[in-house]
Structures are given as C-alpha cells and as structure tokens.
Length: 344
Ligand code: COA
Image 1 (cartoon, rainbow, N blue to C red):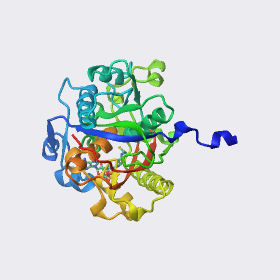
Image 2: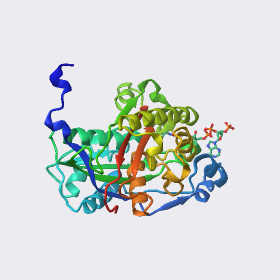
Image 3: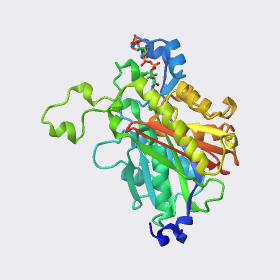
Image 4: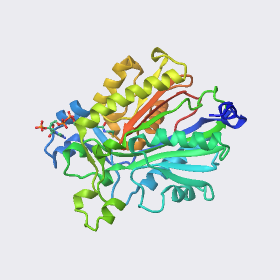
C-alpha cells in the first residue's frame, strides 16, 4: 500500500452516525401452544432450547416491503426528517427475485429517485448493511442513508419442519444514518465482517436460483424452503460471534468490561448466553427480546435496539457491542456509543 493510500483523506473522516431508529412487527402472534397443535414439539422444548415463547408472523398478502415501509417510516420520523440519499434494504426474503425490493420501498416512502438496493447477508444483513451505509457516507456518495433490515422469514419456512418453524419469525427495523464525526455518540465504530462459503450448505434455500434453474431439473416443492443444520450452525455461531466481538471491541479501543449493552442477533437464547459468557458480559448488560419476537433474521438487531431503547433499557451514552451470525456463513461485529434518539 502506498503512503498516500495509508493517510486518511478528508472524506474518510466522515462516519455514519445513527440519528433515528424505528421498528415494526406484524400484529399476528403465534404462541408455542399454537405450534404444538400442528407440530411434534412442546412449549417446554421450544422455551428451553431456544428461549422463544411467542413470535409475530405475517398474514397472507403481506410481503417484506410492507414490513420495511412501516419500519422505514418510523425511523424517518425518529430522525425528524424524511430525507435520505440512499435506501439500503437488508433482506433474505425479497418481494421477488428481480428486481431488488429497496427501490419499491424507497418509492413508497416518498424517497423515489434516491439510490436504492438490497443487501443479501441473511442474519448478518444489518451489520453488512451498516458497513455498506458507512461506505456510502465515507466515500461522499451519500450524506443520509436509510438502512432497513426486514424479513418475512416465515414465507420461506417449511411449516412442517419443527427444527426451523419454532424459531423463525417476521419483523423489521431501520436506522437513519447521517454523515458525522467518528467520535460523536451514534457513530458506527470499526466493523469486523467475515464469511465462510465452504459451509454454505449449513443454512440454505436450495432451489429458486441459477444453480437449480440451470440444472434442467425441476425443483421439488420442499427445495424452495429454508434448511438449517442446527447443531453445526450453533457451534460456528458461538465461535464466530465471540471472535468478531473481541476484535471489534479491541479495534474500538475498548475492553469487554467497558460494554454497557450487548446486542447480538437473536438467533437462540442459548447461543447468546454462550457468547456473552465467553465475553464475560454479565446478564444485566445483555439485551434480549427473543422470547417475544423469535429469530427475525436480518431484522433482529435493529428490532432489538429499537425495542430496548423504547423500553429504557438502552439509553444515551451506553457503550453497545453488536454482533451477528448467519447463513453464508457470514458474521460481523461493531461498537457504538448510543446516541440521544427516540425510538419509534
Ligand atoms: N421440538 C421437539 N424436538 C425437536 C425440535 C422441536 N421443535 N426440533 C428438533 N427436535 C429434536 C431433534 O429431532 C433431535 O431429536 P433426536 O435427538 O431424537 O434426533 C433433538 O431435538 C435435538 O436436536 P438438535 O437439532 O440437536 O437440537 P439442538 O439442541 O441443537 O437445538 C436448534 C436445535 C435449532 C434450536 C439449535 O441447534 C440452534 O438454535 N441452532 C442454531 C440456530 C442459529 O444460530 N441459526 C443461525 C442464525 S439464524
């Protein structure tokens, strides 16, 4: 790398700063008892293995963009301005394979004309989206970015698969990011991102893409559903979220005891506990909403942040560690000091 490349041009001093946050979950709630009526499972198994009691689900006719628009509206209201130069949508369940869903969301939000595109990083979509938004701002491409993470995850879940149907649910969260100073509250800290495509088969929807279509073989209906090898995934999730968290904390110049709030992708309560234990973060500093929303894929972290902020569990000045893991495999972590925003 040349000397000139290593010195920071002015533009890289522009950090992405959170200035608004909102979330949305569809009104319909499915309880564990509801699931036991159609699956060979029990409330006790679901609670002890996953930490989930209830989850919100879309009803027929509702798509990811509908959730994204609701969360996006709330984030813009929270930011006090309906302006954004770019709309980034992190999702695994786009409304259709082509085109991206973000342009339609931008248009419905009155942001037609803004740059708009989707980010595909499954349950790490929000952190990959934060990196994307930070890059747009640092490069001077945008001054304000609306980042939405939304998933109608139940639309790709096989209702007969007890290994996934009890875990995944629907929701959306969004943040407005503006150009600001790296040292100010709300500035997105150093981002640690990683992937391991050699293990892509652990979490996948086998059909519907060019691989299956070009095979000349029609897909079986069940190949359009999401599959997860739970036990293997669990092991990698704990390992990568722990390692990425350590690295993000170190890059921020923090130590684990500095962390006031731990906001991890709500994959499974036992995974979260295992990661937090390894990071030596006490239970009082761990944010969690999985009991009432389940695993909402990419939406999970902004939904958690918005609900925790609205409930007063996350307040201005808190040092927050974010970490996620999911299909790809893809994982990430970052830090930020919570800004003075009203979550809607
Ligand atoms: N109800 C009752 N029993 C169930 C069940 C359910 N809903 N789902 C699975 N089981 C059974 C299995 O069939 C298995 O039975 P067997 O021992 O007779 O074969 C037993 O429970 C244990 O299965 P296993 O998959 O090993 O359970 P687990 O303790 O690993 O928990 C998950 C399963 C999916 C909850 C857990 O592995 C997990 O959360 N994995 C990671 C999820 C994740 O992080 N995903 C990535 C990010 S989204």
